[in-house]
Image 1: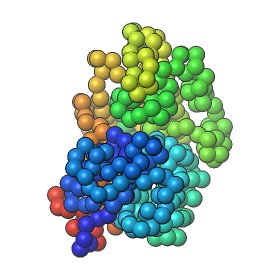
Image 2 (image 1 turned 135 degrees about the vertical axis):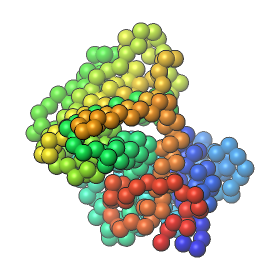
Image 3 (image 1 turned 30 degrees about the horizontal axis):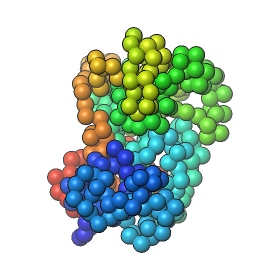
Length: 358
């Protein structure tokens, strides 16, 4: 491409501050931004980013379609919510307009195993208009490509076991509430844990209805199986509340989580496959105490056995850098909803983004 890649930013919160800056630093340009928050609508994105003006103001969601038709972006970055149902309208608008889109929505990483209806809907529209929709972020490397690369150096695999923790304070109130942060244990059991105390048949019906609430690892296990050529036989999910011995104040929730109440949750997803490989992955999202820190650890059991640990990863920055580095892959891709295991390796972009676009 002989010009700068043009980007529209959906959502102008904490993540967008990084994604927009990274787009500029990688030689692209942000030509539009969209939000629902009255306090940022009309502001220059430079002010949102904490820097000099860019002569691009934040547009209200109601005017998003008109704005996108005017600026004709190559791609939209959607950094709003964690469930595919919550970002469906933003992604569908992009698909309808023929605008490529990449989102940090965790379920969007591999939504076909948790909300096949929305996945199919977006896939069909994107194919009609000739654009690509996908999900990326921290999981693209640290729960995906890193593990598949280690698997490539392994002779025989019997089990893959992973665990990752993150501070819900870093990702906004919607995510914190989805993790049950601030609930009593009784409330957590009723509102969060009870959802997964169902049979495989019942779970499949919920999935097909579009009402299933997957943990992040539900979609990651599906991605890994697709990447490694494994055939899923069964997949289960269990959520357990996390607690702390003392009160912890949450800036995101705007309240204090009482000692013994849920600071968040641990979700364990277990997948069995026809090839005999079991994948057991856990994500722990909670309001951190002073002792807590982000950690990502995976072990591949077999011949040989390998463990890799990433301590204190800069999860927000890594998420945003992964999304921006994926931009050329999305633009170059075939049309449809294409999950990133089909793109190939996620690469560092040493040159302007447009130089990687065919």
